[in-house]
Length: 139
Image (tube, rainbow, N blue to C red):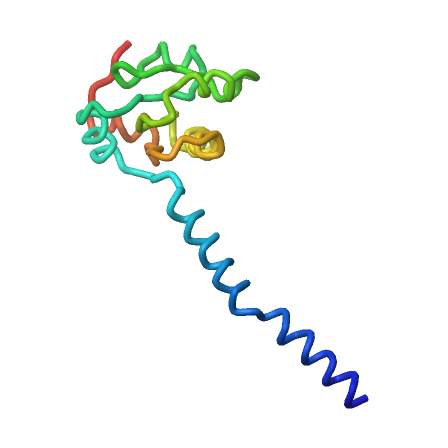
């Protein structure tokens, strides 16, 4: 019984290799570093005004026709070819993504990140918050 316990202890200690723990930390840090950023309306406006990126509206075309952020590209997240269409965007550009209240754009931000986009900013409360702050809306 003592031998069994000693063997179990050795296996357990061997599994806790410091290299494995460090590798896990590095992976966690990379995931966190690459994660898109949720930003509020005022920060989203600041980013757009810098002119370094692409404004991406992931709502339906009908929703976008009712009002959208000026110069936004509309790519409906619900369309089958969403990933194909976003792959045509330059991966080195900042992407400012939004929807109505922030749920679809958060999903789109994850898809963008998964497809190699590293500078993704999500309008956390969507165009509803944008409009509430009286920021520009085009029709």
